[in-house]
Image (tube, rainbow, N blue to C red):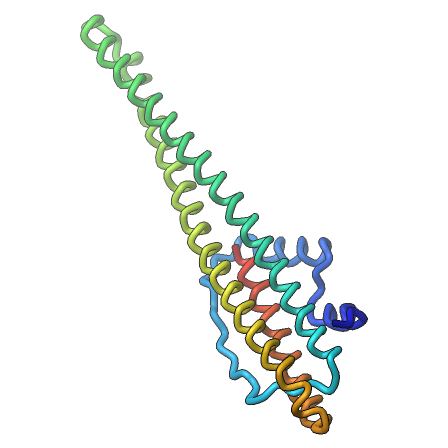
Length: 208
C-alpha cells in the first residue's frame, strides 16, 4: 500500500497535544453521557486507485491510537478509584479508632467536662464529613469509569466497522476501476463520515 496519503488523512481532526489539552480543559467539568452516532454507510465503496485504500488504513490507524489513549485513561481512572477506596478505608479506620477512644474516655472519666465532651463530638462530626467527602469522590470516579468503558466500546466498534469498509474497498478496486467519478464521490462521503466518527470519539474522550 502507498503511504503518501497520510498527511491528507490527518486533516479531519487536529491531534496535536496543544489541541487535545485545550479541548480537555474546555470540557473538564462537563458531565456528558457518551452519544453513539449512527451513520448510514455508503452503499458501495469504489476508490479510484489503491491509494484510497491506504487512506482508509490511515484512518483505522488513527482510531486505534484513540483506542489506546482511551485505554490509558481507563487505567488511570482505575488507579484513582483504588486510591480513593484506600483513603475511604483509612478514614473508616480512623473513625473507628476515634470512636473507641471516645468510649474509653467516657467510661474512664465520668467527670469529663462539658467542653471536652463537645470537642470530641466535634471531632467525630469532622470525621464523618471527611468520610462523606471521600465517598462522594469515589462515586464520581465510578461514574467516570463507566463513561470511559462506554467510550472504549464505541471506539472498538468504529474500528471494526471501518475495517469491514476497507476490506470491501480493496475487493472492489479490481472490479470497478472504470467508475472513477462515482468512486470519488463515495470516497468523499466516506471521508466525511470518518471525520464525524473521529470527532465523536474525541468528544467522548474529552467529556471524560
